[in-house]
Image 1 (cartoon, rainbow, N blue to C red):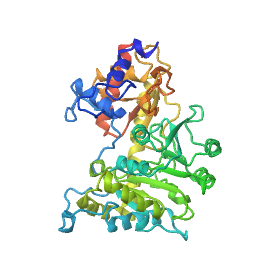
Image 2: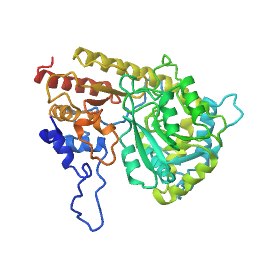
Image 3: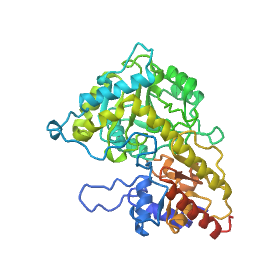
Length: 440
């Protein structure tokens, strides 16, 4: 079977920006950029009646956690104070007070006993993770950038819109649990890459590079290659018995101004405040100066009042308390979803060690309508359930590859970010799909 014989695949190919054929321009000189995977999925669901306010739908597709205050966690702000000064434009690199708060948090969490410490000059505040990634991309020179697949869908746009660098995909092995190991890094250094981009913990597989192995990777790249670590899921660490420990490459940086390690994180995931769009990039001072410059022509900077409101959230005692509660809560949700899937004969070979995603293999299903991610997605929509087909995590900027040839084609990503009621409703819907096709 090829994509030409599948209505689900033709739906995707006909969407603007998702094939390599130039569409007619409605405005002279303007071309449509296309949609990231999650936006495509939401658009398809909306066409079938989906609304965020419709309680009959279960959205396992959106990469966002539930946002209410968790029992035992710190109280989320319900109002913010708008000072006179915050009515003014803020610096494109962020207000100094918030930059200081981020630096202090990282020093207390990861730099205890180390001579080299982060300062406010090592931190740039950005209006969301994508804005941070785009600012970083604007600073990349004529170089080779390696990235691993599967990975975060928005990287595809970042890697395709800027022409100064050449992106090079590195498939991760399913047999190796989608693990970024030292041999892969060594091979990339031999290739002569100058930049490696990766999420860690990893979206969508939920695996994580940590401890001594993460330290060795940073040692291998020191002075040879810039490591861009997307650490948005650093708080969702399920490998240390929900003790609140978070994972960051900041722990293994030797010199904060010389090590070529750049970190992006924020309030979006671990603090469960995606609507605030307050995030940060951490790296050497000279790099951060450049981030402020790119922000001046790309996005203008993050909301000034929300930057001020974010400062008290970063007190280390608040963060430690919140991360412990977060891990306990999300481990329960993860285990519930894995148990339900197992009872449906949808076993997960590599349960997530981090994040709130499950990378679900469909290849063993008998029905051709269910054994690939796009078709499974379309069938789930009929039961008012949204999942994300795996091909969107196969970063393929040219979009020329036959979809059935993708190593991610027979996967979907399920998010257990929503609340328990939504998880139950969505899993019930998936169970109806499987029963409809005689899989259970």
